[in-house]
Image (tube, rainbow, N blue to C red):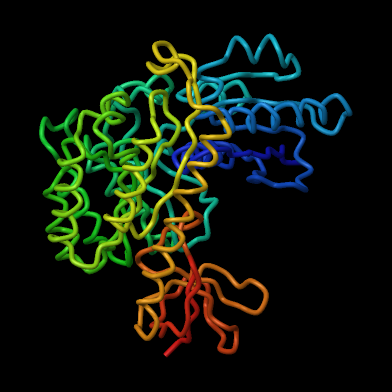
Length: 430
């Protein structure tokens, strides 16, 4: 009988790609593989952990403990742990959860494969066992980050920024397209540094141009640009290429100069506004997703009021908010006192999201009567659930289409928007 392994992925989409690379290796070695399965009868479990903020670390530890308990009860035989949390806390995990059979850092997939008595196949080093719906996939174009933001431990886990070559990415994307992938979700810790290490100059625009020429790719979406040294060359590509979505995820974190300085973001409010205005001017109709961080050490009531006004002024189409988490090993964790109470952090997060909810509702209402290109992700109850070019999976709104007509999952349709809610749209296929 085939050996079975269940891989549990926690955290971000970049982690998911790592899980897919590992799954590909195990499947090629004859293993029966499953992903995030609740009912798998696999006797081996591998957990890809997240170590970004407190809540994510807690989820990772609780997941490991849950499987450790299952091992004690004889339900599974082996537990392997890898990813960001184990990169940071390998010794602590070994000491505190002895039921774990192997603990590996973020970049030790080869060793984990070999410790499972399998052969690591270099020919598959960029090939993945897709866990997403077959019509879209994440494409990780770089790893690591050179920034020194005060609150962030990611560089300690991922190391310096390292780009994947254009040649390798195009080959990987062609392979994905050959499997039926129509939407590429471009991800990195920092899109704005892409190419600088390999080519000594910005290369994001060239990469996206080459990816857009791949047959079968309907949409390309860009995630996680940094506002400093933003590669403006990408904007004409976004404007000219019909399959490069008018969508950009660019994390700004705050707007007040006081907070931007404390966070070590190396930008000012004035420069941020100029950046956003230029992006919107060069790519008309673009939808911007950003994130804001509230409750960072030193954030005053005045800083927060300024942030609220900034959100109202800039009217971001998509926005998420995180309460600050005091992390060891970060600049803020070592140098600053965590001086904003947790309840205040949460109140500020809730208040910002209430403002954004109203903005999102108004922007959605403007779409009523328009006809938009929509991809169908799934059938859920009485509705087909889809997305526009302005929405990425799991983080953005969706389009609900009554299941009167038979639509095909993964296909694109022209949909007339008939009504809207705060974050979702309703429509009919034309």
